Amino acid sequence: MTVSFIIPTPDDIRKKTEAVFKRCPCDFQVEAALTLLQCEYVILVAPTGSGKTLPLWIPSLFNNSGITVTITALNILGEQNKNELKVVGIKAVSVTTSNASADLYKDITACKYHIVIIPPEHAKPNAQFQKILLTKSFIAKLFNICY
Image 1 (cartoon, helix red, strand yellow):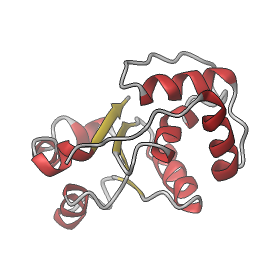
Image 2 (tube, rainbow, N blue to C red):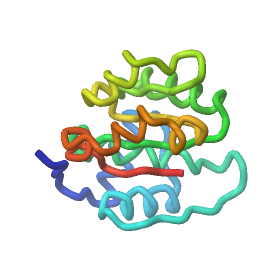
Image 3 (cartoon, helix red, strand yellow):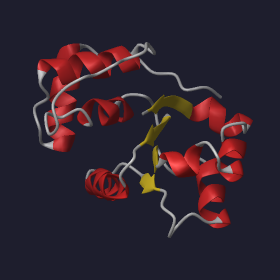
């Protein structure tokens, strides 16, 4: 099984984002999210606090439960994002040193989360996470990796 979905229009993105996240996305956020949904590469440069994270979450509203892996350097941002996603009903996990366990990696492998937020120190050098990235069932649901 692979992730398949219909690419929404910019208006669809605006309406659904506002309905779910209670925020009206800016043009650059809609454009970035649409580009991600078209499975193209995106480099987004904007000032701190301008809303760079929202375009990473918008595709989860349209991509048929595809999995997004987000690599973030700050655990506090990972926890904040996980909590915000939970409020709107998107299953997310923030991997940290305190919760990284065989059970958590098993849940990630089983595709229990649509958003996996992980710091760099748990992504590349971690054998368990590298194994997840090689698991066919996980790869079939993987929508994108953002960093």
